[in-house]
Image 1 (spheres, one colour):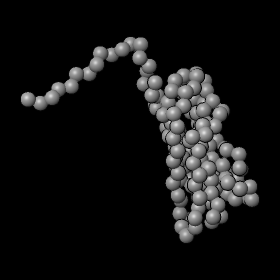
Image 2 (cartoon, one colour):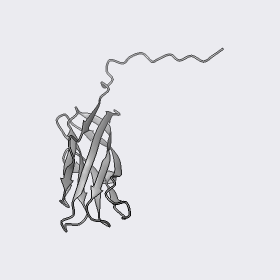
Image 3 (spheres, one colour):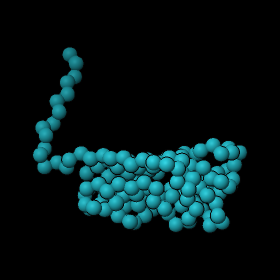
Image 4 (spheres, one colour):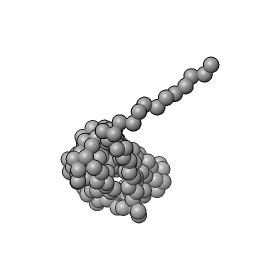
Amino acid sequence: MGSSYSSPAADPAAATPFSDTDDLSSPSPVTDTTPVTIVALTPGAGTYLVLFGGSWIMDTIGEGMNALIFGAGVEITQSSRLFLDAGGEGAAPKTFQCAARITVTAGQEISGRVAVLSGGGEICTIVNANLQVVRVS
């Protein structure tokens, strides 16, 4: 005798499931030490799991970039991730990924942003990027 699964009754009061994705349409050069928006979405009110990732190329070996997530214009500090170009890889793109759990109200933007680490004219090119938001409550 095998096990069986019975789905729970639908709760009409439960939040409507939501997920959405924003993709970078073309490479984006970043030279600013202040985070620059790369991709953004404006979901309805709720709590979301947010994933921001992609690939990048730094024009200067030994430099790097910071990828982070903002919710309602505020940096989600725990999402911040530092990525360094240690050299030896040439112009091969490197990957980045960061995540956060964010609660927003209706009309508030969730964005994936990037900043270079030093302001000496370095260029970090975001080759591709993806922002995914999935409602968790």
